[in-house]
Image (cartoon, rainbow, N blue to C red):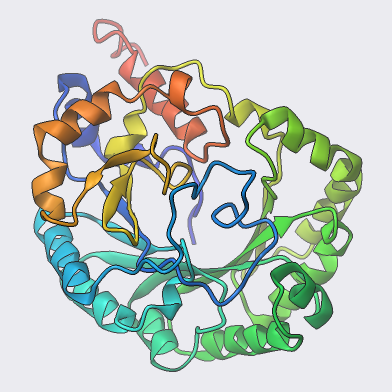
Length: 354
């Protein structure tokens, strides 16, 4: 299996680089669709549900994309040539009852599908459809046993064991779908990273991606939260990496967060590669600004996604959005933007001198 995570995937799409040079708009390659804001967990660090983080400031927890609107979006994505759809939250996407049928229609239209989920509903037909059509499923988890899981997510004890059973059953299916774990590192769980990775490896998952919990809108505050556990976390990660083999990998994304907050660049080219459709039937710049006024590109409640995306309104918004002014927060696309801007800055007279 090749590299799963990279900031250089954009290089496969030369037409998008040319559109950025010309100031035009192409269909996004990848869309995150948030089908519902309803969630069956209540994680203490969830950026959509805590008052002190910007993300989710205008989110309505009962919002759900109507079934008819969802299939309109699906048909637009197929017609536009969108390559991939990830279902995420908001809420937990596997709570959305039409999702199996949605996945099947996308797959029939040649669109690759994936999901981020807490895994509670990764069972029955939902599991079967992702096993058959999914490229990857990534389960967000932050615990190593029933008690720690219940405490972090404010749910009854026993759910960790149930999610583990769902994962084991999923990996037992005859499927090429990659099952991964997104493990959110906190002060409470950092000493149990190795223990948790052993459990996940035994369940048959492909990889565990380790990331630090984002607990503030300010990079320095986030680093201050992680500083007391940084050394011990590093030791745990090093030990966990020793578990890696041909079937299992530990991916270390636990890093200093401050560098991803303040931006020196004044355009966000990655907006043309990945966009977000929320459960409120609105389009947002990215997952880090979903359900915020600053991140709102426009509503598609009363028009199709295709009509909106190729409108002058959206083109103007895409090219005038200024991260240096509007994005003083964590950004998962920061390294990708730096790479794209570096490519766009190459002098064409000197580009052949590789």
